[in-house]
Image (cartoon, rainbow, N blue to C red; front, side):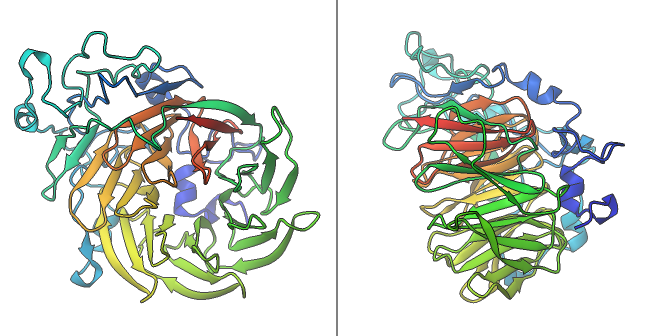
Length: 493
């Protein structure tokens, strides 16, 4: 695919700067306007590379605070323009009821409007705030009071700015769009399968901005996708700084956008800034391309694989969702609905439902048995990433506006989470379904409790974090960043 600026698709223009005069993009320019990371730098007192836990001893649990959510018209550093936050995005609507006007979907409502906040008294009245003598009712450990003296475990301190009594970051938004701070349950940060923290154990010097990552099962290899190639790393060898192989996938100046490893570990699917999706045979003595699938769209932004490994779904820059037969490498169907580029995708564990997000500010669900759209969720911000909970019911969505929203698949209520300070660029659920992670242009890796978003831990990297994956055993996280490397974390329980 040609690298001329005129041929770039909407997401590439959104996430890429213009090329420098010498023809090379800088190492931090994959995400919109990385020239000023002041927002991310000033918003967290965590040092780059430091992971902080939001857990605590049994006496003082997760805190939420009392800040009102960001409202329409808030200014974001993402893209250098006013940012359409979406605290009042519409309820989901069946596809048969009708859709918003396409022009309305692509607009940016809220620009120039005054920042609004729900009245504190109304928002907190139902939660018993302020609490008598500063002690909350049983089960309401949401940070609306100073921490109980001596109750916080020093070994697991709360991140700066998230200690009890400070701004809330998790809100429950009802069907009428009214937000209220979430009272976290007593076991928010405890119990089987809930991490305590994450520890950085390896850095993989890819050499280009790492836009896509994935891990093998069992966790032995990490695959990093950058400009024109995928590199394979053996992380079972401590301190290894060289890839064991390199797969030349696209033209050298075109970025890999998504890589998916089939469960057998023998086949890798690669898509990016090209009309061609390549299928790699990893079982041969030297990895080789065994087939290619060519789309009519100039770029593929995201990939998903059916649970039986027979079908591949690709998010196309023209808004279509292409459905590929992996055995015959043929296009068998296209889902049409997004009016701008389709940016992200996930599939339900039973393989019957597909979720897609787009630059048209919508999230859509599709019935894979009947081949039709089921629901449409409308927002006032572009959708950059999403993930469907493996255990069902919940869909987490990361937005250009910096919000993470957790939608219920059949109810209008949703959770809205505010710990990112810029675009949310990637998101992944743990396989147990009890927690998920998101990453952003603010250099942060955030781990959240499903579905209400209690902060489990947070890590500050040195550049925008563009991609992430969680190992199938929920023991490791890998991230890809704008400073040309991938980082491997061990999850501590």
